[in-house]
Length: 484
Image (cartoon, rainbow, N blue to C red; front, side, top):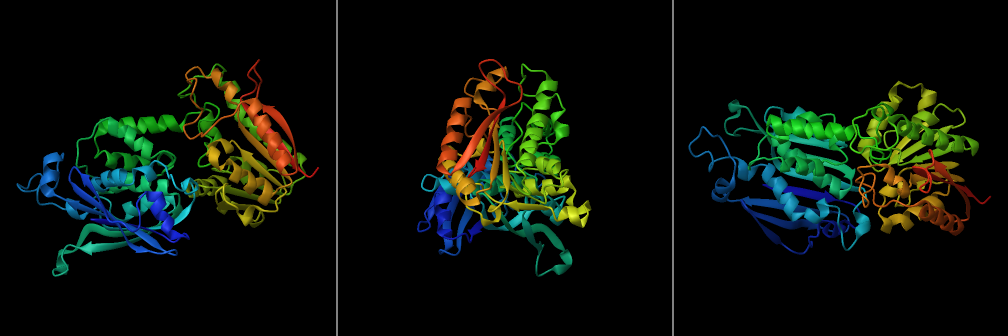
């Protein structure tokens, strides 16, 4: 069983750094059911491919497996399709062989971890029982993949036997390496509809960890979860309940990331993980007050062409559309899936041609220069900066303030001091699992002042939300004005 991952991002040989596997070496890894081999069939600056080949030992598999093959067949545990198809065996191999990449680590070139790269994936044989081609497409296409499938006959010598349940799968997409590997880890065994080991509640944690940031928003999440757990109802139910809890969490910042922002309707739920000291009504109003304040500052700036950087699913864009002052509104996000959701929730296809002409949605990273975002009147960066690795903050500053250089920047982020208002939030915990850092008011003010001075901006800092004695407001805002 072989899986190929190809990139054409120049220099393509950087794939070796991302996967922690040298392109000039043939490496083998022991697995409970055989061996995994990693090698590079092609390697050049313009195009590099890494291959993961599973060499499965049926005896080892039978000794360790929950079940394989047809249980009604005497030799089914030894004579089966497991050595030849992508299954949960491939997921285990991915998590062992590419563990560093899957966890978002790259020692030699850490800036590559979050970079959106062009990828092509080829899986020689994918089984899709009880679903076939439609199921494969419904699993991968919502994540932005282009899907190409070739179905195999049961036997080429006997065409009358018809088609098999096996497909050669080719995928192409632009995304981060970690996201690609997590998608493959979860979706391959869900397609296969089988597991080679006994499942337990620990597998719920594995699924939610690998599915973080995309699974709860997937339109086929229930199907994915149920097939992942081979329709074991208790485990499927627990996993879906935890996903649903995550969807309705709103402890001020818990759902607002650069990859996905919840809708206002979600903010009205009272099914929460953390219990704030404030009332639900006060907490609910924080998003509204912050959004209104950001809009107010953008209107006051006189801007006509506005950026929403880290736009998520387009809540701020929807609010800005109410003001005819804004003739061009461009939303950028690192997540292609979030942009698809933004297009859907904004109902762009139902707008008049004039309204559609005002909106542009683009995929991109805030830590790489992008000429598409240069020359705008104003930019909003709302609860986004804290999701950037501290080592990449300088790159973010240059991209925004040196190269894009909007006349006005409205930037907000959480106030770390306010975290004590959440009773179940530990002293060292942050408001969201994806936050890379959080700053106190003094730290935020010092950063804003230093950044303004470095790039010839003036800056004013404001609290966002009701202030509490000694700890300030739950969020904080900086308004940067260029050259004034």
